[in-house]
Length: 285
Image: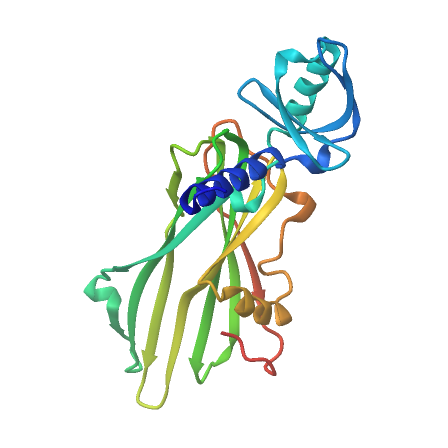
């Protein structure tokens, strides 16, 4: 009987090993493998690591063998399998941290408060908002061809005599990563977005136009395929659904049009997509 501490350690090792060797089993196929002694088994490849190959038998048992104990034909097949599946990662292999950063911008006195000939005055304040990202991975093998695509949602709200439904626009921030390793997370910051808060007052009326960033949805692509999404704040997914009821084009996934990673690993210029609300019967965040 195993000592309790040793048993826990053994269980953790087994779970870790199973997680590694079954990483790409969805893409495996059953075939015959022959070793250097001429013995043949029916199995499928479920993992390759450090000169060894893990084979899964029909009954479910997994055996790990030295790569060079198999026939040349089998070794060639395993190499091809590895090249095909080496980037087959899963969302739990990664961690994406997103932090919102806000900076108040000093507005010159002559711009902050202006008076018109009719006696109306305008007061302005500006805030720059950006997001800081940190992408980490837990697996040892480097992951290549990563694109992190962020859709930052900006809202403009108008109050007063010229009150309107909120307007939304989508600010795109795109980051490409040639290679990511477990030893060095990738950190970057989105381009700051300026948000203005303008209040106009006169003797008879007043109005306010305020811009703010309500959230961001970030999609991680590997090899041109969507892997997972993260929302900031964490409850923004529900808020975004309400926004999309009247602005269906805002925050939509890229799908088949997923961005492809560039060789230089640089962020592409940001783009904006605007949408106006047409209905007032729904309350947006």
